[in-house]
Image (cartoon, one colour):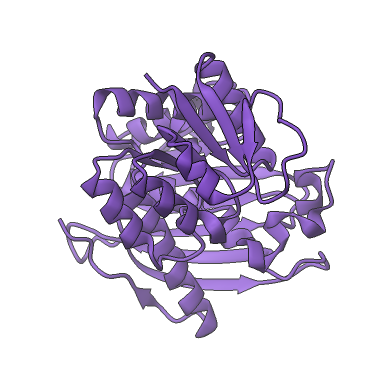
Amino acid sequence: MINRILIVGLGSIGTRHLGLARELNPDAEIRVLRHQACDHTPEFADGCFSSLEQAVDFFPQLSVIANPAPFHLPVAIALAKSGSHLLIEKPLAASPSDVPQLLAIAGQRNLVLLTGYNLRFLPSLQRFRRLLHEGIVGRVLSVRCEVGQYLPAWRPDSDYRIGVSARRDLGGGALLELSHELDYLRWIFGEVRWVRASLSKQSALQIDVEDTVHLILGFVSAQASDQLVGSVTLDFIRHDTTRLCTVIGESGSLRWNGLTGVVEYFPAGNGEWNEVFRHAQQRDDSYRAEWRHCLDCIESGHPPLISGEDGMAVLEIIEAARSSAQESGRQVDLAPVES
């Protein structure tokens, strides 16, 4: 039974986690850690801390790390040392530095560490993956993913210029903020072997980070002659909000729409797309499923679907992409994953 929960950060995502924490743990004592002075108790919370020392002394059984990515690790490490299970919002950190220390502490103390790539909990993405693994398109030849939304329209009630996404010092930029695609592509197709990348600021948005990312990913293949290559485009500039992944195979194509929850199949020689699955998800559905999974892992001792190691693997792809972009798109190889 989880009786003490800590929410770190109270931006839009922290506020969402706070509401879900209360919904799913109505009798728990839930407190919030904020960098601002606590002049009132937030709705659904039982109190507020303004220092990490106070939060650690609370001895939370589960902590949700939802502050900006550059500040995840110091807080997460301190709370892990106190014995708290962790749900860490994506990305796990702003860079891979010091992540191994956190993973070691969590492993030594047998803690659940769930990285918050919540798209994996969407029924439509789960069905998309299952159909591919069942061979609906035969041998996969190519993967093409794109996600984009005009940044000022992302959170229309706030000034985009001062939000996390727009600021380098807070871990913003399209590569970190839209890294869901990197996580679910690994989940579906396995480890990434190499990366070629272009990062740029194409728009007149008042931000100091990249608004457009083009990635070419080479996946680890069983046979060297059978190299699967995927392309990924991430951006803050398109007005037609989009999240699509299309897989091209020898016997057809399969397409996932992450906005509508629709999966479509185009069989070879058929000439048209056919809907094979639809699940109209509500905004909080995947986060609620993520929470239930986290609580179940704590109770059962089962490993989480998206581990700290998964979060680290995404950061390594991001670092390789940054290195590639700095060298005019040179191919950067990733270190082989130990079996």
